[in-house]
Image (cartoon, rainbow, N blue to C red; front, top):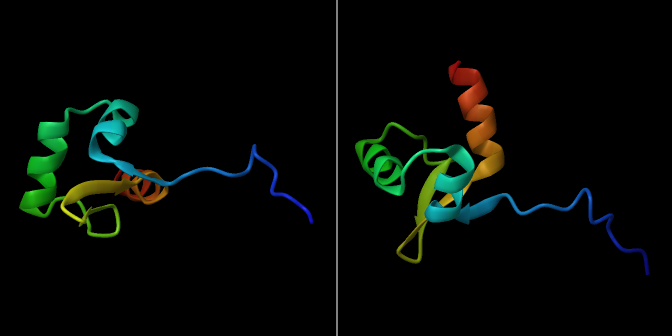
Amino acid sequence: MRTQNPKLAKISIVTLKQAADLIGLSTKTLREKANEGIYPSTVMSKINGTWMVDTEEWNRWHRAKM
């Protein structure tokens, strides 16, 4: 059985708190902007009552916005 290369494997969906550390914004700012609809639902969504961020989608969306 062949295993996947660990360097290529990465988790793209993280909690809001983890994403805030990666992005450099506060959790409050991210949560408020998500509630206002500034971030698309492909980037941020609530899963079982917890805000989750898809970091790959965030990078695509953020690059396209710039």
